[in-house]
Amino acid sequence: MIRVLLADDQSLVRAGFRALLDAQSDIEVVGEAADGEEAARAVRSQRPDVVLMDIRMPVLDGLAATRRITGDPDLGEVRVVMLTTFELDEYVFEAIRSGASGFLVKDTEPEELLRAVRAVVDGDALLSPGVTRRLIAEFAARSKEPAAVGVLAELTEREREVMALVGMGLSNDEIARRLVVSPLTAKTHVSRTMVKLGARDRAQLVVLAYESGLVRPGWLG
Image (cartoon, rainbow, N blue to C red; front, side, top):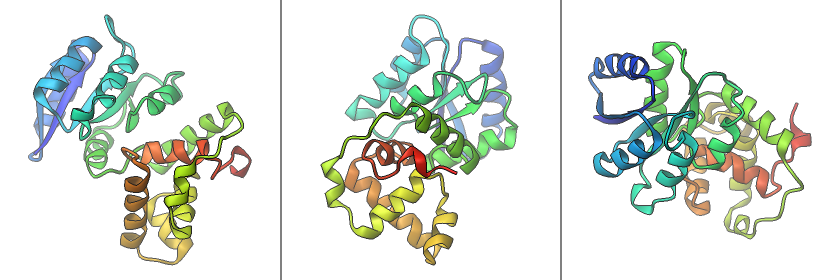
């Protein structure tokens, strides 16, 4: 079972998400929170697989709550998906930097919400190539001159190539076609790269690709 915690200050939003998620045979809602402080406490006690976290909440906002959760080594398996009102919410960029695995707009289609919950558990962060590319465009617009990150020395040439393609927004299937390998091989390369760099998920791999200078804003089409 995929264990989900809902964090949103609107009770109707929580109720709608709970009804949808609890109707699935492989998903269970294990708790709710109305503010970030409550969410952080609930995550420590419930240990969910996924937190659906609203960005704007009282007491402690979703961004600060996400940093608290992702910064706790004991909660390394918890994945946070931010809930936003608009796809290009001004805080989405910072949410990914804070360790969120991706984001969803609140009026997303039910099927997309379910797919997203299952995707982040499988490690497929950022939820879709289209969303990935929008995030990358935002990242590129804010990027400063990248500083070299010595940890990239641990990667093989192929792993650097794969990381660059992840940074450019390509999915595993697209990477497989570009490199003429199987999707499973592409996924394996991505996973090994994440392990070597200590990245929580694909989202952080995108961030590292830019911060290391492996991918530069000028590469975007």
